[in-house]
Image (cartoon, rainbow, N blue to C red; front, side, top):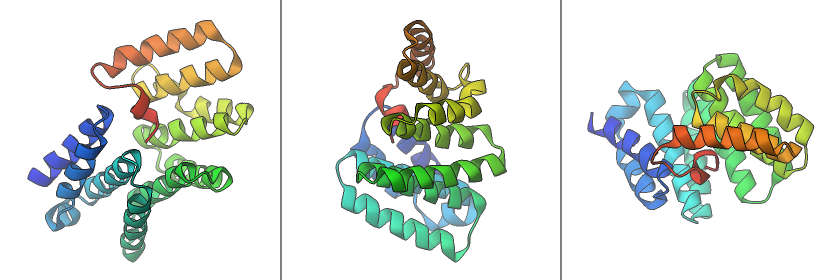
Amino acid sequence: MRAQANALAADIALDRGDAAKAAELGLLALTPALESRMRETYASAWLTRVHALRRSGHLAQARSELARMRSWSDAAPQPFDHLRVVLGEADQAIAEDQSTLALGLYGDAMGLANARGIPDETVMVGAPYVQALIDAGWTDEAVSVNGRIAPWADRDVRAALTEARVYTALGKTLAADSSLRRARQRAGERQLSPIVSR
């Protein structure tokens, strides 16, 4: 239970912009007990740790953790941890200015998320994928991917914020403002900036 609580606290710390605390809590969550009893939570905590290290400016350490996570997942592959590994690799590629590689990995992760059909995972992948597409100047593709997560924009801050970013890229200011207001309402205490950019 303590490891599970640390995993949740790591997510909260990351959403609040405290990457150093999130990295520390993510490490504390990575216990053998959590791995054996709640492998999906274990994989998510590890990915949170990787994100937190990267956001703290520790790119090399994040890359090393991600490689360890990949080896762990490959040893006993499960769809939920494979998805998180591929997503982490895509995010790492963005951080290392390898946008072509990142876009391919995001596409792979989106395929995995679509196959699983879990809304949270679809949004988890779709939000950074849309941002990467916008940054690459692929607005039409960003609109298409956003269409997969738009149904949750009323309930999910990441989806609402992504929708705002797409409208901004399209020059639809009023629609962007409306989506951004919705994202701010859903964010509550959390900072908007780190919610999508992990």
